[in-house]
Image (cartoon, rainbow, N blue to C red; front, side, top):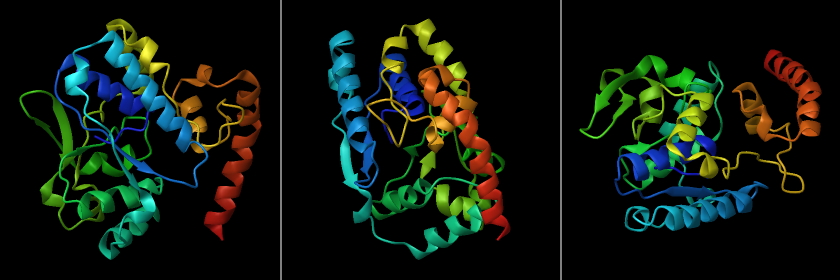
Length: 241
């Protein structure tokens, strides 16, 4: 599974390790240019240490994280074309260009992506997936009948075990199961200031919209309140141009 130390992928990690008790190999793609990379790595290390201390059985299940650099992923014309075709119709982040390229280049199938109901990518894949069960848990994957679609080209390498979940729902389940401490160790901001979420980057904005605004300091939430309308107007202007 891809794991970033964020809310969604950490929730899925906890489900796999503590509920289903299966072995997990996390994958993390390094972006040297992103200000939060070192914080995400520190966060994942803290979560791993905490899990192994509080749930010793996870030592055998929680395999070492495999790190790779985004800049080392070879280009792929087919995936690049599909990505740019989709973003003309629906918004999604740049990671959905280089994550499929990574899987294709390394011949990886069934990589778990923690796309959830609040996620922008949910609106890209929701009409093209089918539900499956592997004897352990339910998940979605892109239906092969859409093989001719860009969505299949991009997302054929993944399964989506979190597609029915919302962030707030994850938090409630985590609290009920005693995972709250670990969930609140997670990180999301791409442009932190003084080790605090900035409130204005995309992950911070999504965190606020998805019902977890309390995770951002009040002063930075106020910045977001004024920043979001300006960003929306700028995006509309750019799209129009």
